[in-house]
Length: 232
Image (cartoon, rainbow, N blue to C red):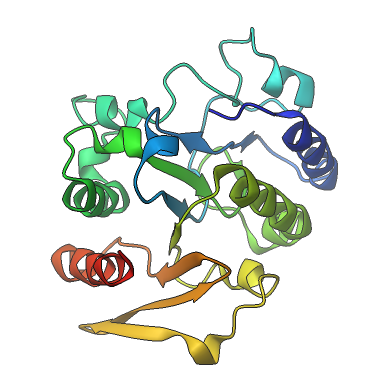
């Protein structure tokens, strides 16, 4: 839950204006926070590329932020809990069939030792506007990147994570350029043909890792956990 939504509301107004000329149905995404996140011993923020469908396709910031709208994107009643609920469904989107969510779940369960792992993390995406199905095109990404940098900065300012974990296969590079992180200072964990990189700056450990789809999940989880344990 975000207590002060006004800075975000202004930024999302700017975001919707930036993509207003893009055709087709699109959805806007807002970060989600577990109910125990702010009390976690070490706060983990996971970041993906973008959503593949979300709550609605509204392009009106008032509708998206209206606290009385059941289809709002901000401070939703099922915030992050839906991830575990969706793992129990037999039809539709099942998070048990998502490599992305399986890796997050395994990392978080091991790190916190909690069955309600989803209540202890925060989650967002690099790109806040996506087509109703699939990832944003290069054009749509370019239209929103400048504002998405501002939004992610505000998310980090608000959420105050100790560790930021990108599972985005290099899509995060546009954002990292704005942080002052020096790629030459990255530590590297190699697992198979893949790498997980990390660097600590200004009290935050930044972890950059591939999107889990199609990759060996055990080795991926181990690489991330090794970094987290080294930083404890």
